[in-house]
Length: 165
Image 1 (cartoon, rainbow, N blue to C red):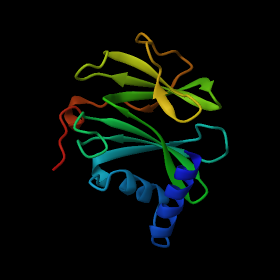
Image 2 (cartoon, one colour):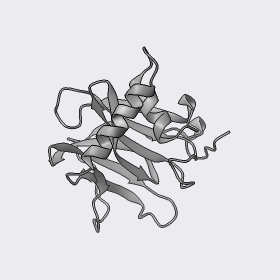
Image 3 (cartoon, one colour):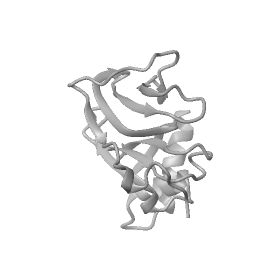
Image 4 (cartoon, rainbow, N blue to C red):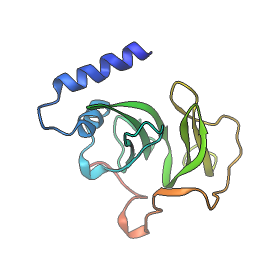
């Protein structure tokens, strides 16, 4: 798994033009159909390595979302590239970072809804290989220690009823 991740990072680095943003290159590698107006990005150090990782919340249906609405992509910053360490489908804002950790990575709290999704907030924790929804967990509540990364959108911003052009 680590070898595959290293090869993917190398491939992205070798195909990224000089001066290009490595985060944009990683997003294009994951889903070439996404354009910058179809996602929002928040940068935060999730694993306390001194590098800002990236959370990418899609606003459009595309290859990354498999037609299931919003997807939260979790990307690790690695020198001059980013690698995917998780993807959560049917995720909606608000999205929080928690003080709690698993395997050295901060937990996330994500609002879930949509077909077959249990409505409410779910903990997204790192399992040693990547971020996964905590299986079998009931919906959880936010705490004052949780820090919001993506705000709950207003109905007028179109986030709830988005479609790719």
